[in-house]
Amino acid sequence: MTARRCLPWPDKRLRTAAEPVEAITDEIRAIWQDMIDTMEAMPGVGLAAPQIGVMLQLAVVDTSRERGRAIRLANPEILHRSVELREHEEASPNLPGVSAKIIRPRAVTVRYMDETGATTERDFVALDATSVQHQIDHLQGRMYFDNLSKVKCDMLLRKARKLG
Image 1 (tube, rainbow, N blue to C red):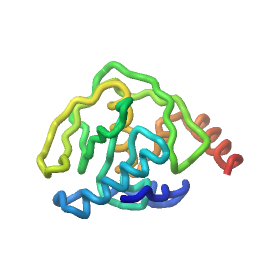
Image 2: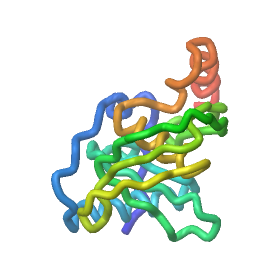
Image 3: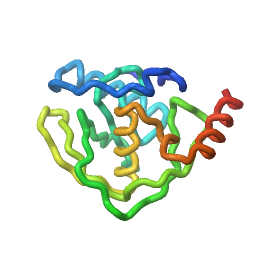
Image 4: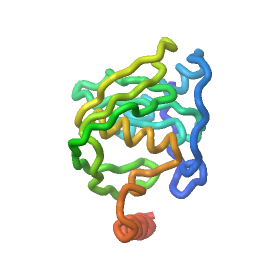
């Protein structure tokens, strides 16, 4: 498979909600593999299909130290968010060179279709939960910096423009 190019911010597709996946096909599995290859090349701990211009509700997450344990998600939906929060430095290959501390729920329960086409519910905690929430934001046309105040968001985007 292949590492793909990530869309540069402010490509309008990054602000567009992705379409649901009807079924897990060989084409979907190939897209997931390209996404994993792209995530590994960054390197990163997650990637959503819209980041590479594929407007489908597909995401991959791999926070394992040894790598090679990517979780493939289609149509992920958060069913439950923990009250306890966690702060983590987040970034995106779509807006390289900048990052921000984002506060999100420490744990989430997510329903998604897995690589076999089965509907699965899984609890994600700590970095896994942060990454899954970050990817679901991308699938809804949101970027991590949308979670910042307007002032902090404007500062981040100004800094990114200077770097670009």
